[in-house]
Image (cartoon, rainbow, N blue to C red; front, side, top):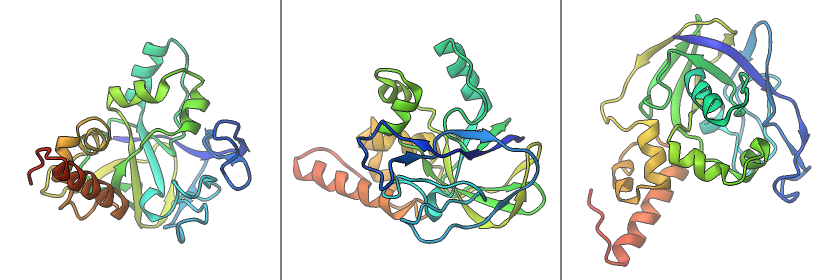
Length: 230
């Protein structure tokens, strides 16, 4: 298990969200970088800060902050999409900071911790939910629906221990929680399988906004007489 590449965003104009970002830019265009990259926990949400030096986000209402400091996607899943779409997808093509190989990114448990390289420790926090910028970046009609149906969202990570990482660094799982709730399960619960949402309510390692979303949906379903059991 290792990093194939470490990818940092190149700011570019964002024509895909109607100018709703404060300065009309996006950092989704991630490119591999050479050498060591510093990793640190970002500052407060809303600043655009993320975990990798030289990177940032511009849609600060929905991205960045401690719970979305680093985004990882598996090369194996990019290869699957490459075959399906019939076009090349380089490392960083989905806006991921870390392109991995041999790591079960979607099967990782919420709260699972990875040691990357010698010192850095990252914690799996939640799946990526596709947005309008992602669909525009891919340039495919119905892309977000297609991405959701595939159930291969990739994982956001928190920075637990800062340090430096680089392409080729090993990745080792050093902690796995007992709850069994994975990135892929969480993604399906919040997108297509609402009956699974009660399972998320007691997963303390999930970001507060995910648990609040799950709680609100569960309460609304109960109010409509839907079945939602914990």
